[in-house]
Length: 401
Image (cartoon, rainbow, N blue to C red; front, side):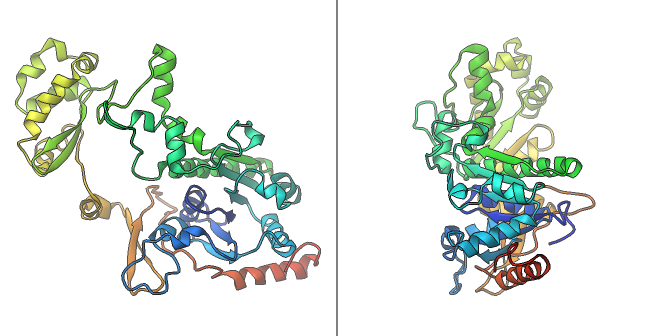
């Protein structure tokens, strides 16, 4: 893809699994030329599935496709002098390098930030790890490996997710990876913007723990302002009412009307003038104190109606939405209107398959994913040709084969 707001930006992508590839997928969607550097074995996510029916090639599954679309692939063995030298050459001509190895790996390979930026002072070097990099603050967990569920647990998300009397529950999507990856993409674009004026890159560091703690920002001020230790409260909100997930005849609906004017509108729509007239429910703060009563009143109304009936009566007047599954989302006209499922080729099967689209919309420089994920080393010959051209131009001591 070309023409996006990052058209012309060259990214060397050393990431694997989810957090790092999600960050570089965002950059690729935005138009950057992202070169995914893989070991001879390839990113383990290639073998994670799911695979579509009839795909006997199994070059990659939906997981890999979703977060590696739009990238090129080259195989380099960074443990060999030749592979490390080739990577150094690629970084020397790049705007950005992104990696999510364990702390210290790049240093052991002789490819540290300091070494690479000495060759290319404008390089933005970005890293996402479980507990960050010592350059930004040495965590006592620096050497600990981390996964999504680990940082959801440690950074507070699971502590406020679940029912009041139940066990902690992780959030469904891999938010412990995806949100840090999103933050890293923001950090990279910010550093690129700054480098346009100074000509100097910098080290950009996101810890998965830090990102999820930032996502849980409410628990911090609740604790520092009041001394409270927030706990799981099901689908309710400790500071807003109504802000609930309520039963319907065929599922569940979410209703959020904490603003006092919205509350009065809601009471009118469900034909409960008594609720609107109750001075003890007149403000959000008062409703929070009686939120169980508010929930029961609304549930009595929603439970006798289907999801679509609730939406038909409340939609556009108060914030309301049905709890939907993937099939219902795929059929939602909003998703089609906003291009939020994009169709990509998949090696090994005829036709295209859908992945989640790009929520960033630009009026002049569209960021629309339109190229599938690469086969392993699919662009290797192309990249090695580029390296050979540079060797001819700058001499063999500058570029490895």
